[in-house]
Image (cartoon, rainbow, N blue to C red):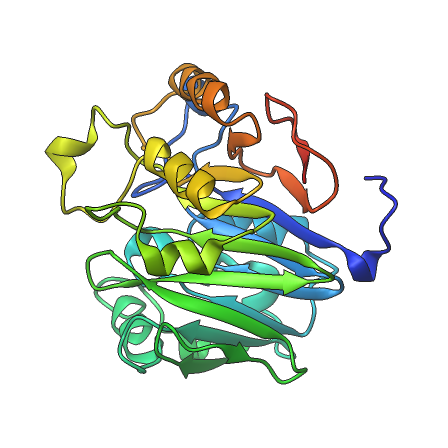
Length: 297
């Protein structure tokens, strides 16, 4: 990847899993992918991971030799499609020198430790996390608070409308801003003023577009939104680029390509995220059809 920015000035996003609810596979899911949510965010040299869905496995396989010894994993929430990849992050969890910090903000200040301990234990799972060679350190916060990491890096958060709550994250680096807003259900009226303020002027917003406007009425209350509402929010808040994730497991490549064309007719800088796709936030405008490497103004 070539660009005029130094590594320290770059804000890089990579999608390792973009599917919602359950992994899918087969010939209809080649272009967009079938792994559940996992996003890699690099603020210069600083690495964050957002969510630990099944896409975390491929993230680990790709970064076998270049993962930092301390990894910060930010959970949007703890539903299965956002936690199911954690024990399979092999280059990290099988390294006795590795520290994995988890951050959870939708449990009224509680960390993810107890919930993950119940999930990764017999009879649901054969081993517990505490027998893995790495060290887990679990941190709780309340959505809406800003996280200040040990090196002084700050990440802003917001509580999202989702069953049991979910956390949106905002990263700012070298004059560029990235907002990750998933899982979220739009409200009425829309856009929500607090969420508009949170994403205002972002170079890129990642948004939950699991349903279309036509599908949504039968799924009201399930905690997800539509690409149409993502476009409304982006345009109202002056967001420059929009990436849709948490893709419905029934939406094939052909369906998603058609949806993307409809969306780009309204907002040309919007696209539907593809698994393994990299985005250099704040570089140049996105093409109408998102390619394996996309640069967003």
